[in-house]
Length: 290
Image 1 (cartoon, rainbow, N blue to C red):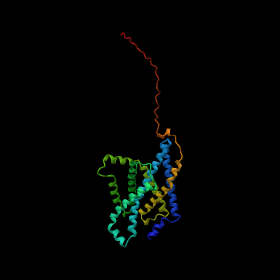
Image 2: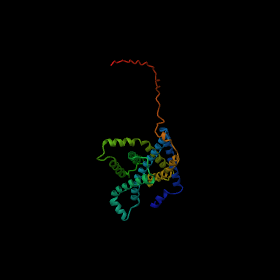
Image 3: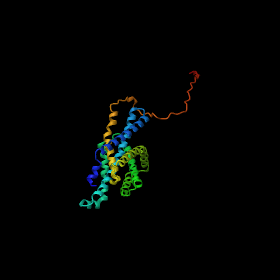
């Protein structure tokens, strides 16, 4: 299979449209889960809306960070596979380890392009952004474990080594205190359910793709996962307008702009009635003769 046939396969009609529709359907289910959770957690409409968009944007960032990392690995794999002769091959064969570091920098720029220009994430602060990116690295480690131990492919060991080095360098640095590191880990732990939804989304796509031969095993698992993330990003770009339109125009009373947990369990212990006791107050007035 030539390079053009290799790429053309993933954009063949109607297979690519069906794959995109499947992405949109799965994303709609994820929106529904976020909406139910936010509505259960907060009774106030403003707080519920903020929670929904916070969950959605954390999910977007998870897919963006995972897709950008998988992307540069897929490019590296494709160059190794199709560039086998010529001046560029000699240059690539001599400096490919250094170019992999350049690809890492490009992937970081692509991630910033997605969450600042393609879909601007306006509701995440710096701590939330850092925590979801740390969760994204755990997301990638699970994918690598699948490739290494379940898919049983040892061709990506170098990628895993580079990625683990990048992860350690990103979150362990000389001026970071242990307290800050633990705080970041705790923040990332809150994103585990979102990561599980992302892995489920990816698993559904891969199961469908391999069962219908839309994703070809001989094309490389990294390439298939990259194209799955690419379709996920396109689906997010199409669907992220839907919640905005749904919540747009809803007016809320500013006097009720506070958060109240709706699903908080009530105590089963009965409240003791307050006893009202009438007490007679005797006031002794002492006359002082001046």
